[in-house]
Amino acid sequence: MRILVLSDIHANLPALEAVLKDAGTFDHIWCIGDVVGYGPHPNECIALLNSYDHLCVAGNHDWAVLGKLDLHDFNLDARKATLWTQKKLSEPAREYLEKLQVRLQHDEFTIVHGSPREPIWEYILLTSTATTSFSWFQTPYCFIGHTHSPAIFQEVTNDVSVSTRCLNIQFDEPVTLGDERLIINPGSVGQPRDGDARASYIMLDLEKRTFVYHRTVYPVSSTQAHMRDCHLPDRLITRLAHGW
Ligand code: ZN
Image (cartoon, rainbow, N blue to C red; front, side):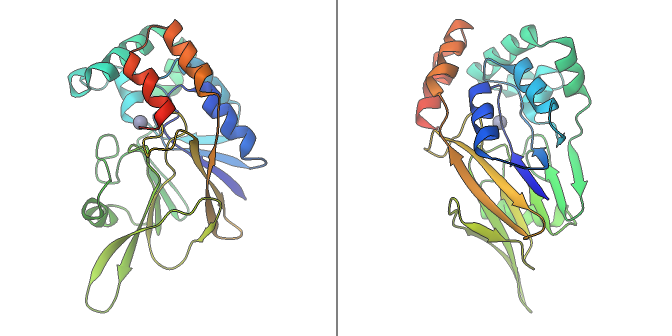
């Protein structure tokens, strides 16, 4: 069973299409939230995702578009993009977002957008936050998104202590699912923030018990042109070319 794990599509259809093409064959998609927000194609991205056998959890932008979050917690550009998305969202897309749960569990995997402690808002950027997070899920592994940066945190246990280390990400190299518990972030499809503009995703192979990080180029200028047509904020348009 091959599972395409992706997060933070952010209504960027060219990026999502590129990932689906680059991924080749797979059996399911696990989507870790923020399908919409920032980008110009909220309805199209939801429709495309919905055409695949998939599961998806809610992210903070998905909730914001539904009016479930106070927009004052967003920066000005994110707020403007959310208000635009609210106007643009089709009824089927709204119904899709309304049904998303904030936390899912699938065999050995917990799936949340932010963190297992606070699935909508908490960012796991630091090993200290990851250390706390390990006590908030029971499965061996947890997939998260929200930071838009690929990351693997490993819980290291010995007779006297428990600690967390951050593993180096090697693209296109399999990582084995072993005895140590992991928190795994696939990075972002539609708005990477790790200095690499390419869309990021993971291919998980449950038979081989491995997962592999991949990056793929997509036509950034096409997304940017659509964003300009929609009068979305300049800063959101510019950042896509730089991956920040
Ligand atoms: Zn996001």
